[in-house]
Structure formats: structure tokens, C-alpha cells
Image 1: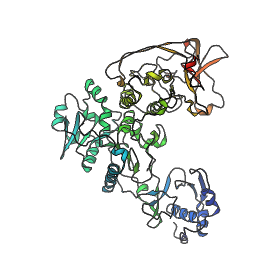
Image 2: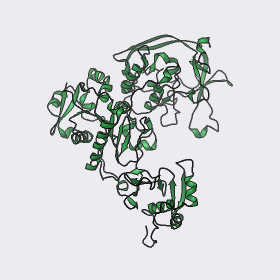
Image 3: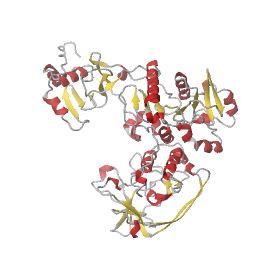
Image 4: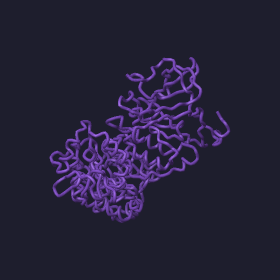
Length: 589
């Protein structure tokens, strides 16, 4: 606030609000924006408008030019001067609940996520979760179970142990990085690591994770690269099949969510704009740089600050864990089966069912009634695959192994008669095969066929793209799948666990009509040009389009794709949809 400006009038909670503020108060959309200049706010404050008074005090912490335009959002209370940097207004916990009821509660931040203040908050979250969160307390920690190998933190030493006695332990979720260079346990180093793992050989992320455990009085930690023998295919297959046990039974999962590799560590020094708060109302209301939103779908701007959540292996690690501590670039975020808490308060949520876009929240694999009526339209498996398939893997051959623990959980829910088939399920196989890739122009669109994929071509796991299913559940009336093909035989012979995606044989025999077609690129209409959606199709002749599709692989890259313009034979459809649930039983085609 400029020295020449007159004192801001005292805030009077009982005063009426001005015309501009009343319009915003009545806005239907809480995310609606309002543009005002500082001079307008000052005039409103002088007329005793409570909202203008509060806003004028807030913007005066950063700007004083009366002509400066300010963009306000209705709820939550945030503002920006240039749409590049946003600020948030918050009130301290314990403030009068009747004063400023629309302002979110927040907390001041220390300068580092390694601070004592941060760990005091973490310990409070752990205690609250362990004592008051019934879903988390019901989590079945099998204290008689320990991973086959685990790191024991003995005084100042880190030792690899086998067959340790049961104790609470933590897991580390981290990005290996493009160099794939974290320290690894090999058949040639395992005996040395049982005696001692040199501290200097641990990456910054591993060192920080050990420090976190020690500060939380946790004496054991499981880290994949050190607790699995990395040059043993047998040990890797054995331990990969036990990921569910390892993460479900961990007391806590530590996530180095801010780091793209082992050099990034867990701890961060915060940006000054989040630490240095401007005072709006002495002792109760403050303003600071808006905290980064937690999580976000792959490819979104909000996901960029949380790179760990873009990795495929992490999807099941987060989903299986009962409690997760995310060490972000600006704050620590806690997630459990009941709540999400953050140091700032800006990323808090009391919803138990937090979605993928909120960071792969811990959750149970629940039975879904959609499986009971014979319709796969609402199958939660499709939601899992849709979310997971857009995430990154260093090796495409890991696509099914990195989801194996979740697949095993679904298999238990679906029953012994519903076999897992390379990412699909026997009892809904024809509909499961109707997956499609995202448009090529999108961030998750198809590329060339992965050279190291073990999945058959009829599985979504065979493509390097995010996939989806067309859902009729969004229509006014229900639609039910009617089989147009007959499944004659399933010849699938897995090597080891079927969930790890390694097969000696993987064939399906279908019986149904075939038609002669020629694939071609369809002209994009003027209405589609701005959507970024390419279309391809099969045609019988020059005028009749039989089917439109999105290609599994790009046509302009090397690979096994059928080239545009080559005659071929095509299945016109595996299923069709009827509004009657009894269509299959009436012998419908």
C-alpha cells in the first residue's frame, strides 16, 4: 500500500455490500471471475462495503496503482493481476467462524519441508489417522508379514535384511529417472549390502527417505531397487507378484512426488511467495501466492509439479497404500483412505473417494454392482485402465506387471470363473475388446507399436496410448450389449503368474461375419477441425462408410500397422447395443 494513500476504513462485518459484490455473491458458478480495478475497490471500501474492504486490503499488499486491474474468483477466494501468478486469501484456524465465513482456512508455512514444523504436522496427521479414521484403522496390517527383504535402519547404518521379524515399516515410492541409475541390489552385491550399504552410495532421494523414517521412529523401509535382486528374473517375478502384500501391509508410504529421479530428493525449500504472507486483517486473514493444486490428470498443467504421479508403477503403489506422505515442491500432502491433508490447508479434502485427478488416492478394491446386471458399461475396471494407460513406463513390457497387484484384487472380486486375459476378463471379453485409443493429436494419442510389448494385439496393453471405452451409461435410457460374434476358443498359456503379462501362447478364436474393406483417412469436417480429432475408417465403396475408428498405431511410423489404402477384411462389430436387457436371450443378432 502506498504511503500517500489514506488509511483503509475499519472492516465492519455487519455492513452491507456494494452493487458489484452483490452481483458476485449471487453468481451460480463458484469459479466465476470478476474484473475490477484497485480504484473501484478503494471506493467500495470507503463506502464500507465489507467485501471491497477485504479485497482492497489484500491487493494493497502487492499493488497500489488505482488503474491496476484485478481478477477475482468467487470461491475459493483467489485473485490475479496478470493471469500468470495467482494469490489466495486465507484465514487462520481458530478464527471467529462467523467472521469471513467464505474464506478458506489455511496455515502459514515454514521455509522448508524438512523443518521441525513440517514434521510436527506430519506426526499429528499420523496420530489422528491411527486413532480416529475407522477405514484406516480397519486396514489389515498383517504384522506377522514382512517383505522378503527390507532395509533395517540401525543407528547410522543401513543394512539389507532377509526374513526380518515383523515390525512396522515404510515403503518408498520414487522415480528411477531416465538414466535408470539408482543403487541396485544385484546377485554380486547382495552379500555386501547385508553387512552395510555405504551412505554415500545412496541417492539423495534414498537418503531423505531414510531421514524421514528416523524422524518418525520407523526402523524399516522397503525400496524396490534395493529389496529386489535386479539382475534376477526369478526374484523380480516373485516379488512383483507380491506388491499388493508389500504396500497394503506398510505402515506408511513415503512418496518423493516432486522428483523426476534420485537426485531430486524428498525435501524442498519453498518459494518465498508461499512463505511470506501479506496481512489482510491483523492476526486472522492473510494473502500469499496460491499453492500448487495437488495432482491432476496426466498431461494437465497441474500434473507437472508432481512428476511421480505420471509414472505407471506408482498408480498401484498409491492405490494399495493405506497412508501416503507426498513430498511436493512446495508442501507435504497427506493421503489416507479417509482424508487428504496439506501443510497449507489449500489441498485439503474430506472426501474418502478421491479420484485419479487428485493423485491416485489410497483405496480399497470394492465390489461394484455394475458387474451384477451383466452390463459392463459401468465397470470400474474400465476407469482403472483409462487412468492407468495414460501413465508413463520406462519399459512397455511392464504395462501389465505394473498393474498386477490391482488386477489380482479385481480377480478376487469377480470370482474364480472370471479369468484374467492380458488385461481383459473372460466373462466380458467381447465388450472388453472394444477399447480404443485417444486421438493421435492428443498428449495421450497412439505412437508406433512398442517393440518390447508382450501383450497380444487384441489387448489394450499392446498399444502405447491411453485407451478408453465408449460408455452408454451417459444416455437417458440404459443400453445393454448384444454379442454379434461367438467366442469359439480361448488359447492363453501364461508363463508364471497370468497377471505379469508373459505368455507362451495368447490366441482367441472368434466366429462371425467378415466384410471386405479398404481403410482410408476420413475428411475432417469444419466442425471437427478445432477438436484435434483425426478420424479413420473402413469403406465398402466410395460412398458408404461402414465404420470409423481411431488407429491403434500411427500410420506414418514404421511398424506392423495395415497401411492406408490396402484392401483387407474387417469384423463389422463384436457387439451392438439394445435398450432391452433380454435381447441376448431372445436370440438377437
